[in-house]
Amino acid sequence: MTNLILSPNLENADGFYADLVAAHDGLVKADSDALNARLVLVLANHIGNASVLSSALKAATLKDT
Amino acid sequence: MNKIFEFPLYAYQRSPDQDAASSVRHKVIVIGAGPVGLATAIDLAQQGVQVVVLDDNDKVSFGSRAICFSQRSLEIADRLGMGRKMVEKGVLWDAGKVFFDNRQVYEFHLQPDTGYGNPAFINLQQYYVEKALVERVRELQTGGAPIEIRGQNKVEAIGTHDDHVKLEVETPEGPYNVEADWLIACDGANSPSRRMLGLDFEGRVFEDNFLIADVVMQADFPSERWFWFDPPFNRGQSALLHKQPDNVWRIDLQLGKDINPEHEKQPENVIPRLKAMLGEDVKFELEWVSIYTFQCRRMERFRHGRVLFAGDSAHQVSPFGARGANSGIQDADNLCWKLKLVIDGEAPEFLLDSYNRERVEAADKNISASTQSTEFITPKSDMSRLLRDAVLDLSEHYEFARPLVNSGRLSTPCAYTASSLSSADALNGPEVTRPGSACPDAPLGDDFLLPKLAGKFTLLTIDADAPDSIEEGGVQATRLALSVKDDLSLELKRRYLGNATGAVYLIRPDQHVAARRDTFEENAFRKAIRRATGKE
Image (cartoon, rainbow over all chains, first blue to last red; front, side, top):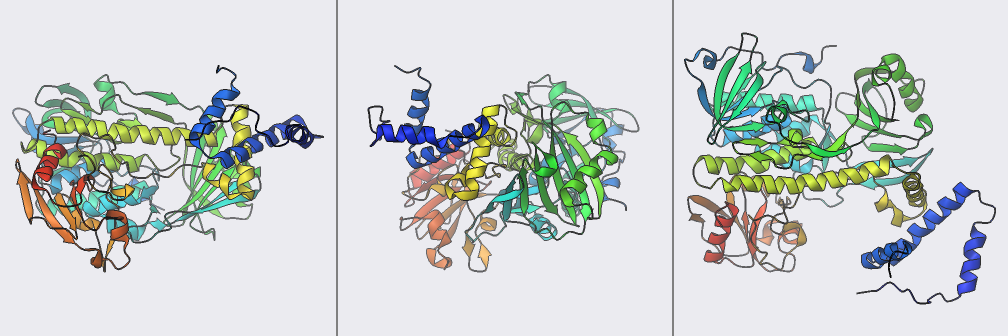
């Protein structure tokens, strides 16, 4: 059983954040939204595990503890 | 050109029932001579159960309507004596393409594994299926089977009683009354029977309109299912192209909400849409045009005392996935052997409640699959559309996104996982043949497995011992003894044994697995027969 990791886990937190923002540079809102949607799907496929994904969906609502 | 749906196939004829001094009582009356009603009647008549089919019309259904018939439906049609005819007339297909905007993003193949007596799907106009069913009824009548179709017999009222139903029937020569021990309502999504009995039909209504145009054309498109999301010729909407026999092509165009159906149906409005899709120069002739919206809903219960509902009268889904007629035919398949046992006094009426439970499970799965397809095809929110488009864009580049593309998950037989008729799994065997599953076909030399399992309880042994037959409470199970050596392709082993060295299966008359073990144990199989017939 794999659990969703909610403690710091990024190898290069600042670097990743900068890349994420940079990926949206120059994009209009619709293209940015589409990029985010594709990114979510790519990452979800990489994770694969149904319980991790379900926990991630819940965590993102900010309604958990 | 005259079409077969313009000729009466079962013209009105006066029945002696109309001149009887008091209402004549029949064993079973089926309302509706569509694919489900006729399949039900044939199934019963083949088992010697007397049946009368009443239909307010006298012809096969107008227009192509249902066109995709699944492998499971063909297997059932084989048992009903008309599968071969359907396959010979039908268009075989096992591939499809998905387009997004102006490009192909994805291509799929159905059932890459082999070793089945029937193809994964055929396309065949509903009127040909109904014609084949009527011809089968005539064949059975010639052989003396107790089956009858009465055209232009419209049921006006249904009276329900503890042990029978009374019907008021209107005909061109006036009304008459008739009775039946059992009534099976197969009168479609707008079921007058359901309305007359004041029964519910709850679910979700979808507001999008779709245009169906069946066109006759000489075209060199392959016999594949082509589906477009947001194509240039139908911006923001979907489109489908699929081949039927006689050079008839099914075209299904999403039109969206708030349209005027009467206006859109006019040839002068339909033809420009089709030319935009097919090209200005393609010559075609309109065979049938219809505008539809759809709903995903079902009755709370499919059995109400002596009245049973089957097919669209009991449940309705979107057309994406070919789950309408196919699931209705499976309803008939599930119901008829049970009704036969109950009529013969070999099983309690409780067995018919299992019809309700098993087919409700199937309807719920179909409704769920079809609702998901609908959400993908016609996204209900901006974000739903954004995610849908993201999946389609990714599917062009990456294999991982292709299983997420949903242009209609195609009908598969329902495994009755929760059925009280199934015994606990006692074989470390394959998933596809767990109790409750529909038996997958397998090759046996030049022959196939399923025709040998038809219409009776079977004790299938594969490299295992068992008596030639066992009888429990009036129900007999006859042994079919096989060995993995009977199938050199090893599909029999793969589908029925897996890692086991031998197995004994109890198979129901509808070819679903009731129980399985590694060896024959008499008490266990006697108990399994009692369970499978609603006695435990």
